[in-house]
Amino acid sequence: MLTFFRQSIREKARKRHPEFGIIMNLGFAGAISIMKAWQSVLSTAAISSAALVSTAAFNNADATTLFCSDAEQTDGISVSDMAYDSADANDCYGVVVDNVNDQTDVDAIVSTKWGTGWTHLIQGDSSGETGELNGYTFTLDWDGSDDGTWSLSATGTPLPAAFDFVAALKGSNRYALWLFEDLVVNTDPTDGTWEIAYTKNGNIPDLSHITLFARTGSVQVPEPTMLGLLGLGLLGLGVAARRRRRG
Image 1 (cartoon, rainbow, N blue to C red):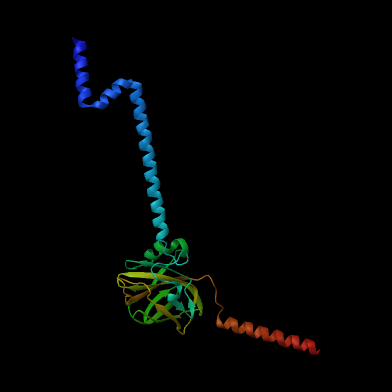
Image 2: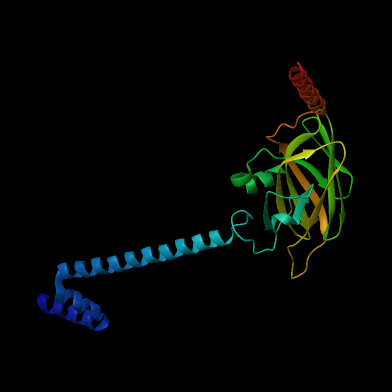
């Protein structure tokens, strides 16, 4: 009776779940083999999926390289968009859809290539804004709408002096950055040019403001008095050499 009852249950199970009959025919060892095979298939699929995700992430990272020195810019900016004393910027970065607020923003963005230690110097909402760094007072003047001129002058001792600058051109809700290394400033303003080449909705926005970040440069500029002494020294050597020849 018990045997009949067990056979009846198995028959009902086979009708409702055909796979149960396959497992019963294969036995426990066969069922384990099938489970292992499925586990291998699922594991392979997971690895393939992870590889696809990894490849996609790499491609996206490569496509979003924003330093002008790394790849051709798809946003249209270039080092020639900003110049100072007839020399183009050393590098540029952008375009960033955000507000540029303080040196923390700049350090976080450019530290991998341009280093850190930047000080928020001037936010030039209008011409004539000033800022201070290491005992120097800088004055920024600019004009134009989507392109124009800018100039920078300084007071302090000694002058001329060299500084690194990052200049941000903000238009609409976005900005780009330009790096100037060992830029020499003096009491008299030195002129430069700027141009917004990036667009929003197909249009070039007008300049909202220029923001400058600065740090001490690596080049020591000789003071005018030192240059004068050097000139007198060279002149004295020339006179002495001429007297020796005459003698």
